[in-house]
Amino acid sequence: MSALHYDLCVIGGGINGAGIARDAAGRGLSVVLVEADDLASATSSASTKLIHGGLRYLEMYEFKMVREALKERSSLHRSAAHLIKPQEFILPHDQTQRPLWMIRLGLFLYDFLAGKKTLPSSKLVDLKTAENQLLKSEFEKGFSYFDCWADDTRLVVSNITDAASRGARILTRMKCKSLVCEDGSWRVGLKDQVRDEDIEIKANMVVNTTGPWARSFLEDIGFTENDPNIPNMRLVKGSHLIFPKLYEGGQAYILQQPDKRIVFVIPYEQDYTLIGTTEEAYEGNPRECRISKEEGSYLCKAHNRFFEKQLKPDDAIFSYSGVRPLFDDGASDARCVTRGYRIYHHERYHNPFLTVFGGKLTTYRSLSEHVMDKLMILTGRNNPAWTRQKPLVGGDFISKGQAPDAAYEAFRAAQGEKYTFLPPELLERYCRAYGTRMGYILKEAKSLDDLGVHYGDHVYEAEIQYLRYYEWAQSVEDIIWRRSKLGIHISDETIAALQQCFS
Ligand SMILES: Cc1cc2nc3c(=O)[nH]c(=O)nc-3n(C[C@H](O)[C@H](O)[C@H](O)COP(=O)(O)OP(=O)(O)OC[C@H]3O[C@@H](n4cnc5c(N)ncnc54)[C@H](O)[C@@H]3O)c2cc1C
Image (cartoon, rainbow, N blue to C red; front, side):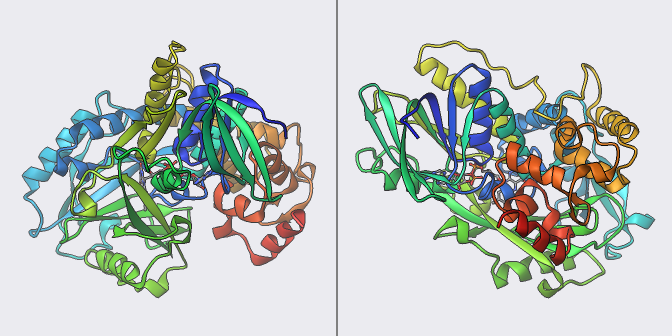
């Protein structure tokens, strides 16, 4: 590859890098995004997957952050109603917690901060109803409120696909090893991890969105030595356990723990229940973090305190862990470290270079907009912000004034009429994962046979081809864990058949 020259190089293909690449490409910049591994291979595939204001941050008086996140919840829901859906939460109450009136007030504030109503308001609920019978008998009353749930990895991939459709170049398995500001541009040294080759590109501006590596990356390339103002990070591990479905019904639970933390119990992938998360200070390589014995016991205990059914960590069939890249605001307790973000400008260099510290899945779009606004100011351009109102790739089935869920239902019904041969679960899976992009897979297909080789469990060649050619999938792992969650559902035989596509 020759030394190509771009307006902007984004380092890191998690949610923040993806959002920035999309925003920048839409503002007319030539963009390259480099990702050391696969897209969303680090923190952005290990979240609790909530697009939420964060009820508990109200206790920490983070009103501004909660307000921003709630505003984002509403605009993201509109922009990708196939990936993001409303989720009801039940908050069981007992005498050991704050009084009912105080929680009611907190939820009232949460509803108020959300502004224009797009989700049902919170309310007091009787927990003696049939669907809540699984709770212990001492929980008689509680609250119901709504947030949104999102497929985190698909959100990353959709942003990247959107960026690419606007001209961005996406290089995965490409690690950034060096950065040198010289002769009015950045020389970006890359290592192709597959071919084991060194490559150099040039860019006028660089943004470091390496998440939990943000600080260590700066240390590795020698940028921290002369700048004592570069913020520190707190790396906080969080783990989840996945159990075979623990109850019927679509409601999730938010469980207040005696240590003041909260643990969520959430319906997951139709047949499963997700329980998370924990907060444990972390040192070491973020890619190697795994759930500890203590975390597993903590999550089961948190669940067992509220539910009749008693769980053990061994009952879980999967687990996953990730590292929160938190901006270090000096809080002593990991629970209290801000989930807000900082955009740091490395002012010593002639060409703009920004590093993103912290953030949340929920606020990636506004974070990206702030990064791009800052770059516009630094370079004297005025290409305007545009992402708030614009659907993401695949989410363009919504029309002005239409409610997101009604738009999704109408879209799915229309696809069902068009592709009558699709079994209902496959129709739902394609509609949810790809939105209008499912047309790239199905094209003019009139039967399942038109989708090519059947690898098993309704995984067809047409989908795999799409993921390889349009979504940068390079391995079975990429496909079954990040482009989809098929890994949970499909048999070993199907996985083995898929392996042959990549051998
Ligand atoms: C347990 C847990 C639960 C969470 N739950 C929620 C939630 O429910 N809702 C919410 O809003 N937020 C949640 N979050 C927070 C959210 O997941 C993170 O803020 C977000 O995913 C961080 O994204 P990122 O792009 O900054 O980092 P990452 O997703 O980690 O992306 C950084 C990328 O940079 C790449 N990289 C690193 N070094 C290099 C290099 N030298 N060259 C090229 N690429 C490189 C990595 O491979 C990685 O893909 C949660 C986080 C955790 C850990």
